[in-house]
Length: 332
Image: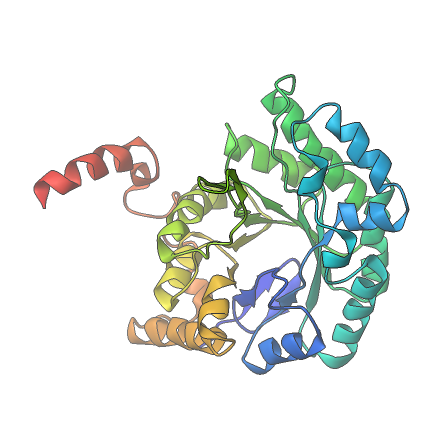
């Protein structure tokens, strides 16, 4: 079964790619394990804007300036020693990965503002990365910012990063956008080579005994795959750039649904953390087995076959789905 796919200008043997995660790409041994278990490419964990600013001895000013406008306490930011890799260590990991691995290596930058830190996009490129995933993790808490202002943050950061590199840049975006199709088109027009749907914003909890904010990571489930599936199907007919599906991809069925909706690749994270690196092969082989049993000639024949433009019931991705779902329990 031909599972070949193109993503960010790269030709991959299949569409299963581990997503950016510190446990999955913490060192060269971890990356080699992903490759040995069939990863089509690897996305390194993120290098954060705050780490780069810290390296430049300007983080203190940056945080103090932000504290005048936003409610987040300065103590919310991790201590410097808690970061796994500093900027230079991160660049060295990119270099080593390119020397040892035979699959594409995609760097990851996480930030929310324009400025000198974006120069590290060029440094990641110079270290050998094949592409960059730009993770703009921005929570708008300032009541003076409109939705247009927030969208402009993404566009400005993307344009600045694109101005510094020649390799492809994908934007990992969140789902909390009023006019998501319009915004995706703006990112495409601003130079994005791909979009990754969606950034999974980790939510804070409250410890009611200790009376403090609790920070605990909850891994995704397959149910969370339905949100990116819906928007993948809606966006695919409107965009010509690469689309990656992330959040809730655990099984071959999850992956197939997203690929049929229009994804070029699917990103695994929690599935690997729960089941180990062999899960990559299991999902890849499961995709191939299903396509073979259903008499497809290649993955390309199935990709996008259930997007909004191609499926037999386009309205299912809009209000029709809501109306049917709210009555489905009564029928059961």
